[in-house]
Length: 346
Ligand code: SAH
Image (cartoon, rainbow, N blue to C red; front, top):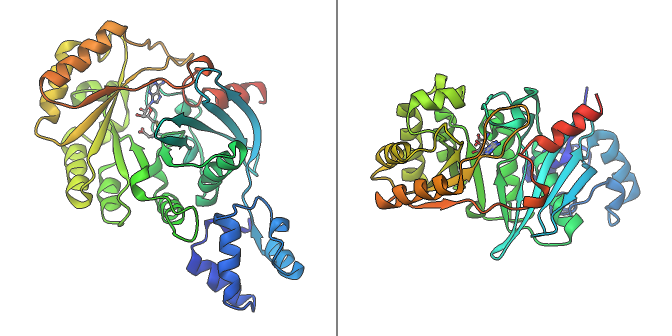
């Protein structure tokens, strides 16, 4: 059996484990601080613990540490795309982005994904496995350590569907917002989902009011089903009320993501239909020019079509922004770096 990952334990669980090992209560605070504040990559770094305790911990627990396998650094804006190795040999992608308002990290929640969105590279090989809370945290911690800079925002927009790995996701959110650790506020975390209504409603009740972003990508079910298989299971009649419920419960304005695909979902009529769909909502639309994936035929909309789409939304009083492209020189859609690595290392 695999040993439990110590970084995935809550403070209370860690205290319980240490008590079972016969340790005094103050050790829990020390170990938790090594794991989440000083962000140790190995038990041997925990120098103020007795050697016997460090050894006992390493026999009992795994400490998920990521192995940097590759990194692409943008010369334009400091964006960095990391490929990290997991302890079982799988690889995942994480991205570092620098903005005027602070540094943002985009992390993966699963190795692969089973949602099957047609334009997305992360889903091409299906789901390999869920990431543990410790593996999600380590992406954030490790990028902070590698760059030597402060992480101010976390976006869950890397590979995987966060709400399809619900329990691990909630643990991750509780740990990263824990005042004894990195202590990020829920407001500085954005969770992007393809739209699982049951889980969106459940998340609303967790007391962790992260910003919710819904991947919409179409103004109606018919078109959405073409692009996103998950839309065959849940219609917009179920998904949008779940988003409204999230807003009511948390007071957090929901964002809608709309990837513009040339000739597929980018006409003025579709913009108008989108405005009608969202009318009356306190929301924000993020327009993302689609990133072409080698294995798929989709192309991005022209500059003109993108601007027209935005103008139509604004005419109907829907807030919209065109997502600023980061790291244009190290381009390639999310999941593409991982995919190239897998092809080279079958
Ligand atoms: N599974 C989650 C989060 C991961 S993807 C979700 O579906 O929201 C983060 C965002 O990038 C989603 O809106 C997703 O639809 C979008 N996306 C994925 N591949 C893309 C591509 N090639 N071009 C543009 N957007 C893409």
